[in-house]
Image (cartoon, rainbow, N blue to C red; front, side):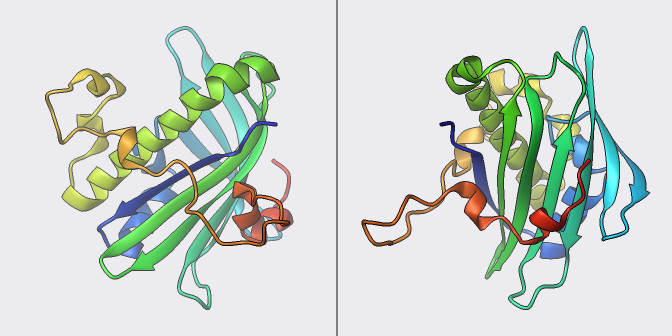
Length: 210
């Protein structure tokens, strides 16, 4: 059984700024290398919206649809965003999936977390051995590019994906700055190990299918 993807970073910037950079569909693809374009399609009756997404590759453009629902005001001061996505593209390594973002205010910024899972598009063996590691790394690298933008104002276009080769630049985005597994929690030995998706907000189950 494959583990869902988990990435966590700490951003020393105001919560509203992190929310803006991640929720605005024009700003989001600028830092997130998993997307080239996100286009809202319609509002959902139960809240949130439906969107189309694209990822432009050298020889092909992957495309799909998704739904998203954000919680900006919660009693504990945190914020969340739930997501479901799918694609009819047989060339996509990611099939249907679901996930979430959590925004946890701290004394000096925001802890920004994602957890998500998907059905493998290219088979479970290749996904487990290669693709899931690549997707997780790309998510973490994108999160660090977001952090740099929010903290310093350096626009993400300054750091294209090829900048991973600029090893002489300590200020470049680095996936290794992000945590890739949740912190350990005490639990009775008889309890099963928690899943990343156990921490998903309730809105994920309420969200319409893409």
